[in-house]
Image (tube, rainbow over all chains, first blue to last red; front, side, top):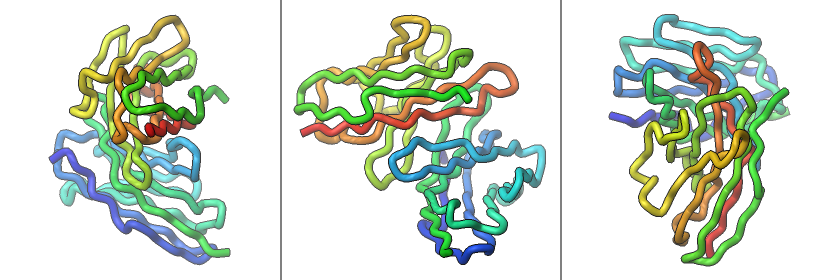
Length: 112
Length: 115
């Protein structure tokens, strides 16, 4: 119940294309869903986050889509660039705990 | 831009030795965390710390682990007697209070290698 399932494990996209990474959860108590970007040898960096009271949040080229009934959320990277090549982690958290449960990560490669 | 810093970047130790990993969270943050990432795997929660006490800990955080905020700026993770399976990247994170309390900012990590 505490798991967050993330797919795909790896993704190759052409420059300018759309990258889509999906996550699913079971615990309906989760109410904060961040996405992190991690470059090799670096710590995860907060990219964008959403709460379940909205279905979509957009920041620049990054959009989170949230489907509360399906217990799924996804990250869309529009106009993907080679500099976006990194590992992306979704996570989920419950109010009051601040304990992130991370997905297994998606290694994105954007071809020039 | 303020950031979380961690030292050392890489620590090599022998099995059974004690190690202390150090973190300096973002200065006005009130919540502190340790996570670990075994090579090629997902990031796992270890412990959260607020108001000078542990808020929550995972099953990984057993009696061999302890955390401390020895002064107003540092936050440490101690592993008393390291095991081979403790080899991982350890990340410190911190978050603000109020509306931003869920936004956790991670440091660059300490790679711990136990031989």
